Image 1 (cartoon, rainbow, N blue to C red):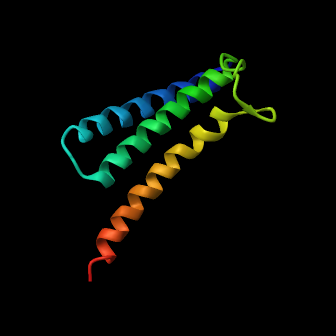
Image 2: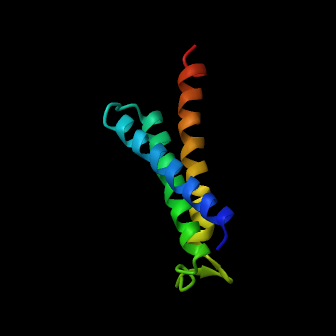
Image 3: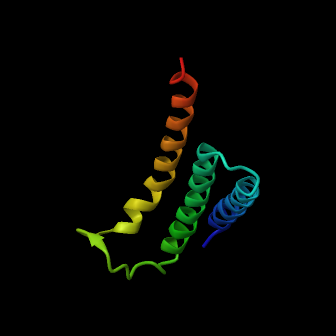
Length: 100
C-alpha cells in the first residue's frame, strides 16, 4: 500500500467520522423528520465508506448473500445514502410547495 492509498483511506475515514459525529449531535437536538433522514443518510454514507475500505483490504470477500457474483451489501450500501437524501428532500419540497 503506497502513501496515496493511505492518505485516501485516512481522509475518507476522518471526514466521514466528523460528518457522522456532527450529524448525531444534530439528531439529538431536532425532531424534524427531514433532518433526521439527512442524519441517517450521512451515517449510511459512513457505513458504506467503512465497508468499501474493508473490501479494499479483502476482509468482506466471504459475503454469503450475493446476486450473481456481486454481494448484496455492495449494491445496497452505496444506494442507501441516496435513498435517505431523496426522501428527506422530497419531504422538504412537499412542505415548501404543497401548502398553497
